[in-house]
Amino acid sequence: MSSRGIALHCSSSAGTPRLRTIMKVTTSKSAATTARALFAAAVIALALGWGTAPASAHNDEIGSSPEGDSVVTEQPGEFSVTTSDLLLDLGGTGEGSAMVVTGPADAPLFYGDGCGTVSGATVETTAQLGAAGQYTVIWQTVSVDGHPISDEYTFDWQPTADQVLADGAATAPTCGTTADAVTTDAATSPPADLGSTDAAGDSTPAWIGGILGAVVLAGAAALLLLRRRKRSR
Image (cartoon, rainbow, N blue to C red; front, side):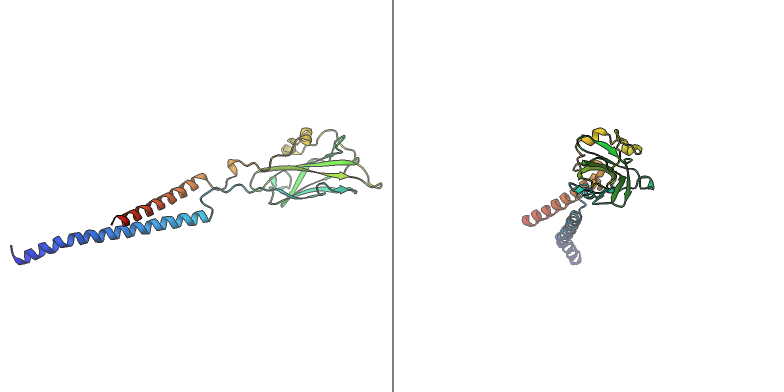
């Protein structure tokens, strides 16, 4: 064999381990880059709250008129409840909610038409009160997220001598399909549990959390594998 052939053979033989080393280093760097990218993406996603479905934000009562547990001496005329978020204006007419004014507590009658009018984050109704005593305002409406919300509050009606008193009704008024749910039983039953939520209120689909969880695990596994390879060298 010629000296040139031997030189080529030796060069080829000597270059093989080097080529494998280069390929191994390149592969390790590529895997490390991919793992870091996956891990960084997962951390960012979790920081932005994409990894878990947030609990439905509660739209709660933050104020009322008259104020709860207050003493009222003049006909309010209007009764309202303001919530922490916007309310749905069902039908676009401001109606679609219910507000029932009932009292006095010892011989309750009903006042007003039972209809609630929505304006922004407030639902209101009009009514004239009757005999003195404790009155209860029961309300039901729909939050902007589509969840029905309801509650009640009481106040003490102590009219002055010049106030004109109204005659109440023995049965609860109805106002469309929403107010049909507000009956005489509702006046004595406890308010709805505003702390409860259902699956329909979750704004983030559950499968997004699953995907991001898989990304986190994949990134962590890749980094662990790379560390083991480095230790074994």
